[in-house]
Image (cartoon, rainbow, N blue to C red):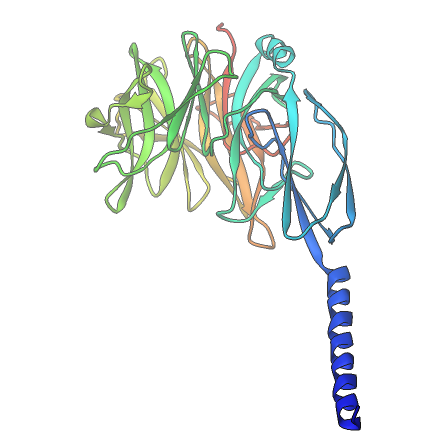
Length: 371
């Protein structure tokens, strides 16, 4: 064999060895991601997913956290990193009947939305703007500062701005885009709210029973304007009659999340102004207004109040007012820092922070029974 040929073979072996070594280095340094979703039996997230990054073919050992009111088939997993992203579901099984018994014996019941992209920390939950995923949570309490989450299989539906309403044996949760209906707070009919050419988007709805009629109060996009309306609500179909919707007058600025109830001498309306975060309480002799100012609830500097709602008992008598709070943190993310309750509507009252298992967003509240 000529020296020239030997040099060619030698150089080829060097190149091949080099690429083999690089390949082995890349192989042993190759990373993979395991995504673990924590869900109930409906596939609805019960908490934020866990993401773990490790070397391909290595093992990730996972100890599952206990969640009050739920059971697990197993608490320990050994998961293997493979090429690409690995997804694994951990299913929590709710103790629904045990939890329902406690709820029916409680003094108050409420609904809120829990963001399932991140978890709460020190009663604050930071969420990247426009990247949230919210799911319904039903809650119960005997004291306003100690709420418990009802453990059941929740509908796997995006929930924004939920409000609670009870009519006969039916519970309704109205939210932006739809209505949930149930007799047991566990099995839900999910009804998408119909829009129309005029009312292009139905936002922040709430249901009220006034003058022997059930109505939906809502905010809607009408052309380039955002206005507030009230329309008859059919509890059988779960739809508002948009052809008979009437505009509510007397709200100022960009207002949203209206709540309405009938007092002894006037109708009362609560809403928040997006730009300022101020909650307005107004009254009118007519259900459609024009509403006149009663008082304001002004947030601390840097904070914004939103989504006020009147807390009623099952007879429709007002028991107070709830509203929620947020601010923008150093990363310019939304930081939800709780919901509040005031026992007075027309006059100033000391707010009570509603505490629970997560940072509440909009909070709809009812007192069970009637005085």
